[in-house]
Every structure is written in structure tokens, then in C-alpha cells.
Image (cartoon, rainbow over the protein chains, first blue to last red):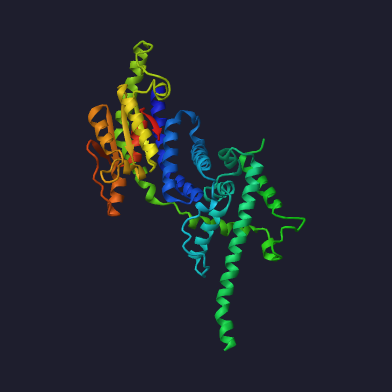
Length: 187
Length: 227
């Protein structure tokens, strides 16, 4: 009976792992800003999860567990990066094709992606885990292995910076849309 | 005893309280809007924008499909093998030293218990490539089953037009029947789309996808080493 239970659990574990992959990929991309690196991180996390399957006692905790593994892979990558060159946050922002603000929402999203890339990595992790994956503060604290108060303060700072940047964009867009009218009046 | 959701509500409340800066020193560049803390509406919109900025992509589905295929086609086989191994383990007395890989310290000691090792190369650093080939050779000499798997930038190690170790790769493949050298076909396909020469060195085989291969081998109990 125990063997059957074990096999059932393994099957369930693999299904959870499968289902989590697109979300892991999104999270890794939000953290590192690079699609290929994100794939490598997810692959690494996948392997570690498969190897450490026995460490997960309750499948209900799977999400927090697997995102914690991904977070550890990300930290390991950052550590390796630091050991060779000084870590440069600007390396990570992606798709910075244009920072010109337009009235288009797509530009707003592109700017947001850029601003997320500019956040310190620790704030970036907090806001993506809470606002993208909807982890609770407690789960985020567990994933990042930090006190819950630290999650709150990092999240607060990240939101503040991003909201400020979004407000800037709105103001610039409003100014840009007003500009032609001013020109007409001048004529 | 409060539940997690109660605690979260409390934290959200405290978080909102933290958004008020009683000193007013957060005014940046004298811009009153800059000093305004994010409102709940701002946070909602930010969350919505974030989800649009980072959509869940189905590109990762290849890996998912890989696992799914592994699960459906080979799960039964692996499970049966595992059950058989378990029963054999129970029925057969353990003989110390029988599975030991003889050799010096270092890598050999790390893989003393390993019957099969998957070495994974994904980077473009020739120093790593040489280390991978050294490890593959060292393990192969000890009759461990070894697979050297390359994907992403690591494919350059196995492509005829780019490998700085062409002779050594082919020689290893020829000399050690317990060593398989495998390139990721999905990665090769991408290189081909870029117009690159994807011909492989002699003795190199392909697997549909590196991640499928890793999942399958790890699922079968192979020791995994990323170089």
C-alpha cells in the first residue's frame, strides 16, 4: 500500500512540476531580464527539484518550495557573476529599445519592464513574487528566507519606485498630448 | 492562533500604514506628486501592468511537453524498474565495496556511488568544455556510464565547424563505449535557423531536447552535474 501511495505522490509531484514551469519561466525572466538565462535558471531549478523531491514533505507547499529553489538558483548565478565581474544591474534590463514615452499602453509596459530591471534584485524578487505570483507575505518571506517585515519594506520600496515611474510616464504622456494644441495656439 | 490570511490582512494594513511618511521628507525634487505614496488604486494598476509586462509564455511548453511525454511514456517503465530495484534491494544482502568506483579523491570520490552520470554543458567557455571532457574521460575510464550533454552555447563544443576540441571529442566517443556524447536537437534547430553549420563531430548523437534528456536521466537516478 505504501508503494502505491509513493507512486501516486510521485505522479502528483511531476504534474505540479509541469504546471509550475511556465510560471517559473515568467518569474525567472522578471528577475534576470533575459529569456535564455531564465530558461537556464528554470532548467537548473527543475533538476534540483527532481533531485530534491524527497525534501518536500507536503505537496501543498509545492509552490513556495519550487520558487524557493528558483530563487536559490538565481542567487547562485548572482554570486558567480560577482566572483568574476562586479554585478551590474544595468546588465539585466532588457528590451530597452526606446525609452521615449508614447501614449500607447504598450510603451507604458515596456517602461515598466525597464523600471523593474532597474530595481535592486532583492526588491525585484519581492514585488514579482507578491504581485505576479500572488504569494502571501509569509510565503514570500519563506521563499526568500528573510523576515516578513523585510518583505514588506522591500515590497513597499519597489511599489513606490514603480508607481513613481508610472506617474512620470503619465505626466510625460499628458504633456506630449498637450504639445500640439500649444503649437496651434501659437500660430 | 491567527490563520495565515488573517496575518496577511494585518501585514497589508501595516504596509499601508508604512506608506504614510509623517516627516514629509520623501518629497523628491520638490514635486508633490513624487512624494505621494502609492494609493491602493496605483498598486492595483501596477499589478495589472506587471502581469501584462510578464505574461506566462507557452514557449516553456517544450519543457512541459518533455516532462509530460516522459511521464506518460516512461513513467510506468521507471516505476516498474524502481519497484524491482526496491525489491531486489530488500532481497539481496548489501555487499560493501562492490559498487565502489576505485580511484583517487576529487571527482571519483564524489561519484563513488554513481552508476551513471550526466554531464551537462550549456556555456561557451572553452575552459568549461575542457573540464567537461576531462570529467567525462575520468569517469569513463572507471566504467561509469556517462553522458555528456550539450545545449545552448555548449553546442559549439560538438559542432564540427566550431569545436576547438574536435579530435578529442571524437576520440573519446570512439574509445569509450560507456560514454555517450549528445547534442540537443532543438538547440541545433535554432542554430540552423540562424544559418549556422550544424554538422556534428563524429560519434556525437542527438536528443530531441536537453531538458527532456535531463528530466529523463534524473528520473532514472542518474547523477546530474552541470559544468
